[in-house]
Length: 271
Image: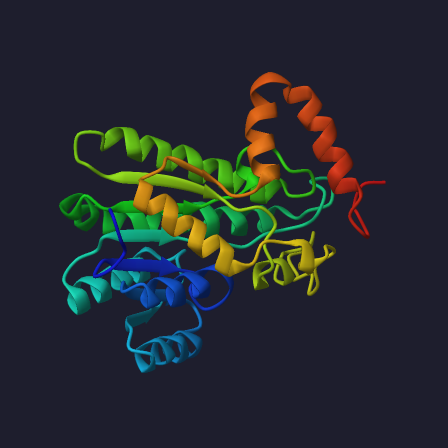
């Protein structure tokens, strides 16, 4: 895929953060974008702004934990633009709590959104992506490469996403389907403020310095480059590349480094 121009790109979690940045960036590059998220009013606003700037956009309010709503998102894309070339499974939530303290409902919620949301969207989009020899992109995390302490449910859901997408890639080796797992580092987005605490409430603020994080726009551009190059794994910054490398040769050292790194967070759950 040399360019996203005239390609239909379906993006979940498109009402804010990385998803919104992707919708705006890709529409500006000539793609036909289809926005999905629970906040229909925000999607309508973003789509209208894209159209006002000469872009092509459609939207569908969707809770990715509901299969029938994911099917409706796919129908919106096909009915509006005739095909699907790229599916970006970006909808996700995070958490911050020790497993000792977290309620099991929180972990189920993480799996429902991050893992099952990806599965649900892929199930209905797959025939169209096979027909176009298109791309599936899962927005994972460094937490999907190595267990991230204080984020058991988040890491588990991202590992599950990776395993599912890698298997989907292998099943479709003869069908021309491209599958990429993208792993941003810490990114300044609303996901961090909405991260769930031990009892399932939103933390409301991030313990990290947002100014030192990747921006959603940076992530969007790197993912687009990965789609064009049909990469398997898209690592975006030094921490992610180092994690991928060190895990191969010194996983026990990586355990200690991750513990030390996360224990430095303000108000860290580690005693």
